[in-house]
Image (cartoon, rainbow, N blue to C red):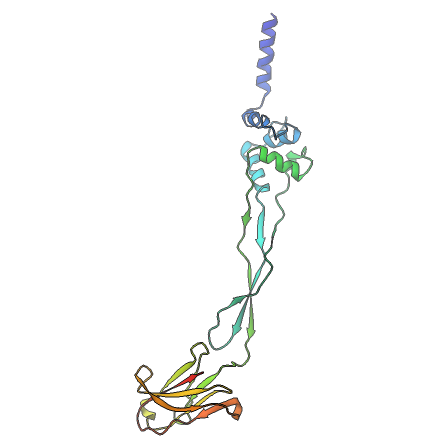
Length: 241
């Protein structure tokens, strides 16, 4: 009779254990995990809980997955006639995580976020971090008058045909239109620079000869050269040094 009572008692205990006990059984055996009310609430072995295993795992994942928003990067774009590549302003290399997911109400036996986080780890949920894309703000500034400006300017016969020398190229070529082949043009360039004027059979043609050079000047901060009257279609190239 006594043996029968023992068997019935063990059967009653087995029936009283929730179906999710397989999760907590292995967890409780871990030395670092305490089988307290906090862990029972997280794993679902606390009496009266209605949350499913999937929901409790999802809550732990949300809590252990903080979102990191990188500091904004300011991109300064200079508004000039020539294309300018934007550059990033130097900023401190630091990132601040956003507030994590709050502890769910059913995990109230956990004394705080540290205990809840520990219980989630014991539940087998791994901590991960989600980093959002770096926010970028663009600031457009007006550039001053180009300091390395050189202009090939035809007056008056080219009707204001003008080419601006790119400082990166240090040279520019002006193709003389055929109808103005017998007219002279003027070369203007920045103050304090030296312009070597070359004569070409065309901007893509062979090198001709050095026609004139010039340096210095005070008229409107520009220098000026007048190519000779050549009576033929040529092109002129001003090379800055």
